[in-house]
Image 1: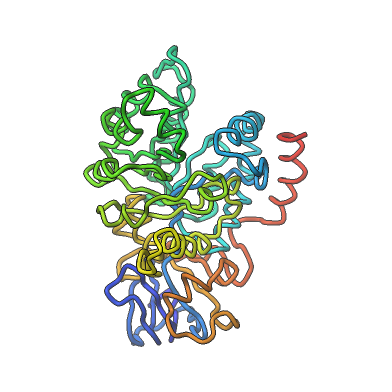
Image 2: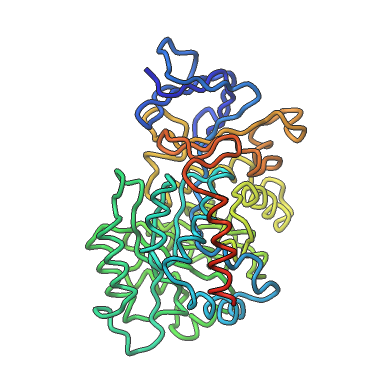
Length: 433
């Protein structure tokens, strides 16, 4: 018997052989997709009508900083370096585990309501945020961002490294792998070889992935070459940081040679179009990366530089931005953009055999959209409707591993009113007071 059966519903599976199925039935049993196709004979404990609804994989946000909700709209109108060093780093220093946990819950509520089922998150204060991320029901690859700002750095005594080890010990593999832990280098410009080499070794020895920022701005890219005689991509590859499954966020200024390195090492580039445009960082050459064979996913970055967690917005911008830049209407298709947010993101997180597709045997990480709205009429092309018309507010159900986290405007795993109040009354006075 199915736990849940979606009946007579339109299914969009961007990474599948048949990307659109009409009048389909999808059965969920023991947290996994147990049936996709025609009407089954097997009964179900609960049946959800698919009339005027659409079912698709939940989104994988492959690069974000989920606890940064306190900084939404803060420091607007600056380039990345000014924004980080004058508006972000000094105020993050005032945060702690409690405030980070509150901020993370606000971000999780926003992301889940907009259709996100998995995140690759880079931050700190994990004693506070890891438990609330786990409690939210979402899939997550967590990483403790590490830096090394001087040549007196000691890998064995660094508290950031110690916190990475603790995060691995306490959370890696939690809930049958729903929570996983990656290593993380914040960026080349905030670290040095005393961190890179030993962290690469630790990561490989423990079978972890790697998350980092790469060539986000022209300044970062060129100053790295001036310091090291190499691009950030070449440098990190030489240091062994890419000898494991790796996520390279942004990749706005990577060269053709960098793209070949990313392809050779199997590094996933993560496109963050809204953040890159807001901070005037530039436009990543995503069509070129895809052509070069680089797995390219989508992310929102933190709400501090976006300023939301709506993956539909990233999908639309990814689909149209590169057409405008290249003057080529074929530079990026709607399906390409949707795949970046689903199957490509799953691969970036090392979850390509378990999520990102509506296929039997995969975890039931599914979202349902209410299509009975004016902006979904007429319905010539469901892929185009999702890429250009849909928005996070159209999501009426979010299910992860068969558990419903959000339905019809109601959160079932996050107390939204409580954390909104705590953000205003606890976090804001402590961080900005």
